[in-house]
Length: 483
Image (cartoon, rainbow, N blue to C red; front, side, top):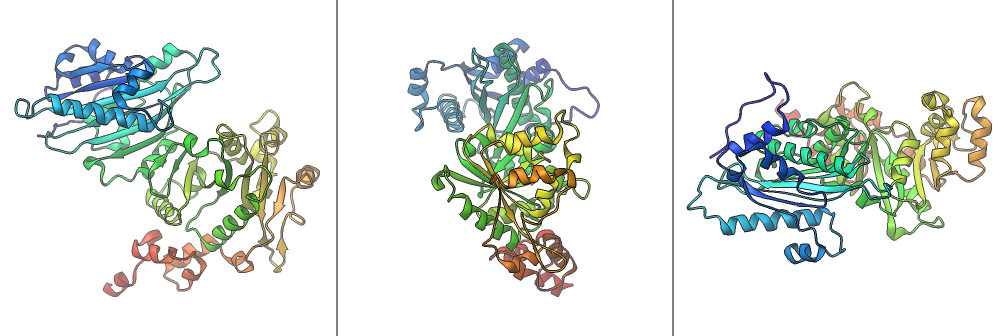
């Protein structure tokens, strides 16, 4: 028995939070538990206030006391409470209790759910704004396995009461979307901000799982978060799952490579390997606590107009196949990237880039929106514990361009010299000369036109994957034969 659904957006205004809660309450099949820790029972309060809640709410609880919480859900390995692992324990524990206590024979048409959150709101000193995990585990058919939607939020408001109210609205939007927008996950994502503003809350991680979402790639949902302005950056691991940036980057040495990776080539991997080898030899760099990030900017994805989601997925699959962690960001300027990373780590960082990228950094036109211009940007960029590892470029006459002979605007020469000779820019010298003639755009054109020879320009295994999965419009031999 599946919930029937008619769209509520085509003809009507955005439904109020009360009407969303009431619609859930009046559905005689939806029945479940609310477990909320850290910011009051703000979500379930919306359902109590809407009326008719007795048919929806099996139980509402807040295990605020840590000892009591541990007795109910167990103790986490890291002894923390506001974590994804804690949230998932809550979701699974409460769902099992419903299954154990409510007879399917007596209630054959009930659709069970558990909504949970574990949250830390702003502290009294207002130095730490707070964050949290929330999610729902639910069915849309009584005999169906459970589906899950789990997300991480960062509060932006400076008042605990406001944060609690915001959480209650977001939680109600999530529950409503889970039941009535499950077949439109992109819309479900956008509607999480109904009656909220992006200045109130940031969603920086979301993962969908279960039978409803078997065809959903969470990397694509990550892209939506940045595309919709819900967050500035998202990350996903080599296994394709979205990961929390704070958890990946916390107190790490971070080496970042920005590129189009369309597709990832031998020059990209040579740049990565050589800069990494240099980076881990630096003082204050612990190889055991070093994280490498391959970053693609939203502006790069939009380079040819609207974002091509298939093109994005092709890039993502290749980078993940090489075991890389990928970041999608809205940071056009490098200083914004460094500012973002500095939220999570004060340890030494590295940027690996080509000559053209470094020349662009010294172009004043990118900083006209700053009151302090390029000097303000450089204060945020180079005065961090950061070093640029510069990969050389071939000149038209076959000579190599590096940090010693690259050309910046005449007004920037002295500024460039200052950073260069203070050790902020270091040449990658142990590069592969053959890689200097490889360009992603050339490889992509060869693939699109069916020209041979592009395979030799890519890392081992990448060309095979491109052919097997027909990435970047590649036509396999079988397809060509059939035609």
